[in-house]
Amino acid sequence: MRVTEPPTGRRERKKAQTRQSLADAALELFLDRGYDQVGVKDIADAADVSVTTLFKHFSCKEALVFDQDDDLEAALVAAVRDRTPGTSIPQALREHILLKQTQFAVHATDPRFADFTRMVQETPALRDYAHRMWMRHEAALARAIAEAVGAPEDDVSCTALAHFALEARGFILRHAEPHRAADAAFALLEHGWAASHPGS
Image 1 (tube, rainbow, N blue to C red):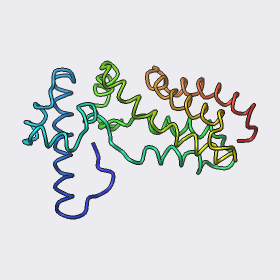
Image 2 (tube, rainbow, N blue to C red):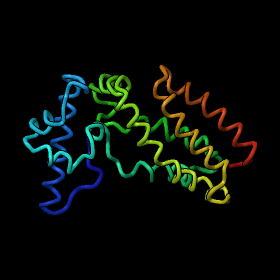
Image 3 (tube, one colour):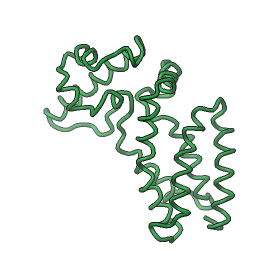
């Protein structure tokens, strides 16, 4: 798991180091034993901290698995606002979702990525947590879409596009051929969006 901003000051560095140690310990234990076979005390012991300290850094056991990237929402909004001329909003979101296929602690280039992804997909608690994390950005994305097309902030079509684009991610990630799944899902969104907002 990565820290998105380099910490400044001795206290901040110490907190970041403790957080990293916990995340690293959790990842190693989860991949070695399986998520359900590891308790928070096991993780705290492996990182040589108390359970109380663990919960100061992570709100729950599931949070140890995911990249706590505060820029996820900003990146989604930027995908809409900063899209290249001639790129529709559904196209921009498709490209972004394929680019940002994971918010996990393990990067796609890591040799452990396949095992890690399988663990998440096969563990209901992790699968549900990942979905909740992703869908919490729906309101911000809907506002960005509405702003981009000059629609009211509560425009139903903008909210619908945000919702279904975010929901499509789960289907895309589970599919054996993510790019083909993204093409199919976003072709439907593109068709509906173009009918109500031509040229955007």
